Amino acid sequence: MNVMWAVGAVALMLGAAPPGQQGGDEPLTVATLRFYRPASATTTIEGVCEVRLPMLLRGMGRGGRYRFEVSVLDTAGLELQRSDWMRDVPAVAPSRGATVVESFSFSAAPGRYRVRLKVTPSSGAVVERELTVDAFRAAPAMSDLLLATAVRQPASDSEPLEPGEIRRAGLVMRTAPAPRLTPTAAALIWYAELYPRS
Image 1 (cartoon, one colour):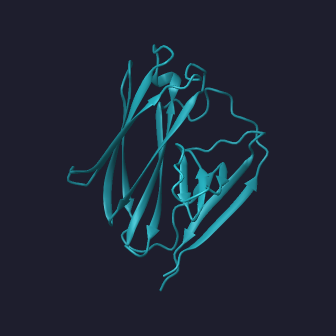
Image 2 (image 1 turned 90 degrees about the vertical axis):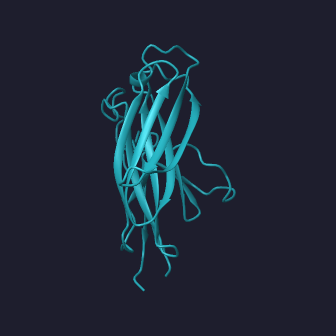
Protein backbone atom coordinates (compact mmCIF):
# COMPACT_ATOMS: atom_id res chain seq x y z
CA MET A 1 0.00 0.00 0.00
CA ASN A 2 1.55 3.27 -1.09
CA VAL A 3 1.13 6.62 0.62
CA MET A 4 0.39 9.67 -1.50
CA TRP A 5 1.32 13.14 -0.31
CA ALA A 6 -0.42 16.41 -1.03
CA VAL A 7 1.42 19.65 -0.40
CA GLY A 8 0.15 23.10 -1.28
CA ALA A 9 0.86 26.73 -0.54
CA VAL A 10 -1.47 29.69 -0.25
CA ALA A 11 -0.14 33.23 -0.11
CA LEU A 12 -2.27 35.54 2.01
CA MET A 13 -1.83 39.18 2.84
CA LEU A 14 -2.70 39.51 6.50
CA GLY A 15 -1.70 42.06 9.08
CA ALA A 16 0.15 40.81 12.11
CA ALA A 17 -2.00 40.33 15.18
CA PRO A 18 -1.20 42.83 17.94
CA PRO A 19 1.33 41.45 20.44
CA GLY A 20 -0.38 40.07 23.50
CA GLN A 21 -3.40 38.89 21.52
CA GLN A 22 -1.68 36.01 19.80
CA GLY A 23 -2.72 32.59 21.03
CA GLY A 24 -5.09 33.90 23.70
CA ASP A 25 -4.18 34.07 27.39
CA GLU A 26 -3.32 30.41 27.96
CA PRO A 27 0.30 29.99 29.08
CA LEU A 28 0.49 26.65 27.22
CA THR A 29 -1.43 25.65 24.09
CA VAL A 30 -1.01 22.39 22.19
CA ALA A 31 -2.10 20.78 18.93
CA THR A 32 -1.59 17.20 17.75
CA LEU A 33 -1.39 15.73 14.25
CA ARG A 34 -1.79 12.06 13.30
CA PHE A 35 -0.11 10.25 10.43
CA TYR A 36 -0.75 6.58 9.62
CA ARG A 37 1.98 4.00 8.97
CA PRO A 38 0.43 1.30 6.75
CA ALA A 39 3.37 -1.12 7.08
CA SER A 40 2.98 -1.40 10.86
CA ALA A 41 -0.68 -0.28 11.21
CA THR A 42 0.43 2.31 13.78
CA THR A 43 -0.06 6.05 14.11
CA THR A 44 2.70 8.61 14.39
CA ILE A 45 1.47 11.40 16.67
CA GLU A 46 3.20 14.75 16.32
CA GLY A 47 2.58 17.34 19.03
CA VAL A 48 3.35 21.06 18.86
CA CYS A 49 3.14 23.29 21.94
CA GLU A 50 3.36 27.04 22.31
CA VAL A 51 4.57 28.47 25.61
CA ARG A 52 3.67 32.10 26.34
CA LEU A 53 6.76 33.32 28.12
CA PRO A 54 5.58 36.50 29.91
CA MET A 55 2.77 34.61 31.68
CA LEU A 56 4.93 31.60 32.51
CA LEU A 57 8.02 33.42 33.69
CA ARG A 58 6.59 36.25 35.78
CA GLY A 59 9.18 37.46 38.25
CA MET A 60 12.04 35.56 36.61
CA GLY A 61 15.05 37.62 35.66
CA ARG A 62 17.11 37.24 32.53
CA GLY A 63 19.13 34.09 32.14
CA GLY A 64 16.52 31.71 33.59
CA ARG A 65 15.72 28.20 32.39
CA TYR A 66 12.67 25.96 32.18
CA ARG A 67 12.10 22.22 31.95
CA PHE A 68 9.61 20.76 29.47
CA GLU A 69 8.19 17.29 30.23
CA VAL A 70 6.02 14.98 28.11
CA SER A 71 4.42 11.77 29.42
CA VAL A 72 2.31 9.36 27.37
CA LEU A 73 -0.12 7.14 29.30
CA ASP A 74 -2.63 4.49 28.32
CA THR A 75 -6.27 4.58 29.42
CA ALA A 76 -5.41 2.66 32.62
CA GLY A 77 -2.90 5.35 33.62
CA LEU A 78 0.24 3.30 32.88
CA GLU A 79 3.08 5.53 31.73
CA LEU A 80 4.30 4.25 28.35
CA GLN A 81 6.82 6.93 27.51
CA ARG A 82 8.39 9.93 29.20
CA SER A 83 10.89 12.53 28.06
CA ASP A 84 12.06 15.90 29.32
CA TRP A 85 14.61 18.55 28.44
CA MET A 86 15.88 21.90 29.66
CA ARG A 87 15.81 25.16 27.69
CA ASP A 88 17.33 28.56 28.29
CA VAL A 89 14.79 31.37 28.40
CA PRO A 90 15.32 33.52 25.29
CA ALA A 91 16.17 37.18 25.65
CA VAL A 92 12.76 38.18 24.25
CA ALA A 93 10.95 36.51 27.19
CA PRO A 94 9.84 39.77 28.89
CA SER A 95 8.43 41.13 25.62
CA ARG A 96 4.68 41.29 25.39
CA GLY A 97 3.37 38.36 23.35
CA ALA A 98 6.69 36.48 23.27
CA THR A 99 6.36 32.72 22.77
CA VAL A 100 8.51 29.65 22.23
CA VAL A 101 7.49 26.44 20.50
CA GLU A 102 8.20 22.92 21.77
CA SER A 103 7.41 19.71 19.93
CA PHE A 104 7.20 15.98 20.61
CA SER A 105 6.45 12.81 18.69
CA PHE A 106 5.57 9.20 19.46
CA SER A 107 4.33 6.08 17.68
CA ALA A 108 1.15 4.42 18.95
CA ALA A 109 -0.81 1.24 18.36
CA PRO A 110 -4.59 1.65 17.79
CA GLY A 111 -6.27 3.03 20.91
CA ARG A 112 -6.67 6.07 23.13
CA TYR A 113 -3.83 7.80 24.96
CA ARG A 114 -3.41 10.57 27.51
CA VAL A 115 -0.58 13.05 27.03
CA ARG A 116 0.61 15.07 30.04
CA LEU A 117 2.66 18.21 29.47
CA LYS A 118 4.48 20.09 32.20
CA VAL A 119 6.54 23.27 32.04
CA THR A 120 8.62 24.04 35.13
CA PRO A 121 10.48 27.37 35.21
CA SER A 122 13.52 27.76 37.46
CA SER A 123 11.34 30.13 39.47
CA GLY A 124 7.62 30.73 39.20
CA ALA A 125 4.50 28.66 38.77
CA VAL A 126 4.45 25.24 37.11
CA VAL A 127 2.09 24.93 34.13
CA GLU A 128 0.48 21.56 33.30
CA ARG A 129 -1.84 20.37 30.54
CA GLU A 130 -3.37 17.00 29.77
CA LEU A 131 -5.03 15.97 26.54
CA THR A 132 -6.47 12.83 25.01
CA VAL A 133 -5.31 11.55 21.62
CA ASP A 134 -6.87 8.72 19.61
CA ALA A 135 -4.53 6.70 17.41
CA PHE A 136 -6.19 5.50 14.22
CA ARG A 137 -8.05 2.22 14.85
CA ALA A 138 -8.01 1.34 11.14
CA ALA A 139 -6.42 2.73 8.01
CA PRO A 140 -7.92 6.21 7.44
CA ALA A 141 -8.50 7.78 4.04
CA MET A 142 -6.27 10.73 4.98
CA SER A 143 -3.99 11.99 7.72
CA ASP A 144 -4.74 15.06 9.80
CA LEU A 145 -4.11 18.34 7.95
CA LEU A 146 -0.81 20.07 8.78
CA LEU A 147 -0.60 23.85 8.37
CA ALA A 148 2.92 25.27 8.23
CA THR A 149 4.47 28.69 7.82
CA ALA A 150 7.73 27.43 6.30
CA VAL A 151 8.96 24.34 4.48
CA ARG A 152 12.48 23.27 3.55
CA GLN A 153 14.41 20.29 2.28
CA PRO A 154 16.92 19.11 4.89
CA ALA A 155 20.51 18.31 3.93
CA SER A 156 20.00 14.75 5.20
CA ASP A 157 17.40 12.58 6.94
CA SER A 158 19.50 12.68 10.12
CA GLU A 159 19.58 16.49 10.33
CA PRO A 160 18.22 17.49 13.76
CA LEU A 161 14.90 19.31 13.87
CA GLU A 162 14.31 22.66 15.50
CA PRO A 163 11.40 23.03 17.97
CA GLY A 164 8.14 23.30 16.05
CA GLU A 165 9.44 21.43 13.00
CA ILE A 166 7.93 18.20 11.65
CA ARG A 167 9.63 15.92 9.13
CA ARG A 168 7.40 14.19 6.56
CA ALA A 169 8.03 12.89 3.03
CA GLY A 170 11.56 14.30 2.84
CA LEU A 171 10.40 17.78 3.89
CA VAL A 172 10.76 19.71 7.12
CA MET A 173 7.80 21.94 7.95
CA ARG A 174 7.55 24.57 10.67
CA THR A 175 4.20 24.75 12.45
CA ALA A 176 2.55 25.86 15.69
CA PRO A 177 -0.79 25.23 17.44
CA ALA A 178 -2.11 28.32 15.63
CA PRO A 179 0.27 29.33 12.81
CA ARG A 180 0.45 33.12 12.41
CA LEU A 181 1.06 35.07 9.22
CA THR A 182 2.62 38.50 8.89
CA PRO A 183 3.11 40.84 5.93
CA THR A 184 6.71 39.61 5.60
CA ALA A 185 5.84 35.90 6.05
CA ALA A 186 2.46 35.49 4.39
CA ALA A 187 2.67 31.97 2.94
CA LEU A 188 0.63 29.19 4.49
CA ILE A 189 1.62 25.68 3.45
CA TRP A 190 -0.71 22.73 3.89
CA TYR A 191 0.29 19.08 3.92
CA ALA A 192 -1.73 15.87 4.06
CA GLU A 193 -1.14 12.20 3.38
CA LEU A 194 -3.65 10.11 1.44
CA TYR A 195 -3.85 6.40 2.17
CA PRO A 196 -5.25 4.49 -0.84
CA ARG A 197 -7.34 1.46 -0.09
CA SER A 198 -5.80 -1.86 -1.10
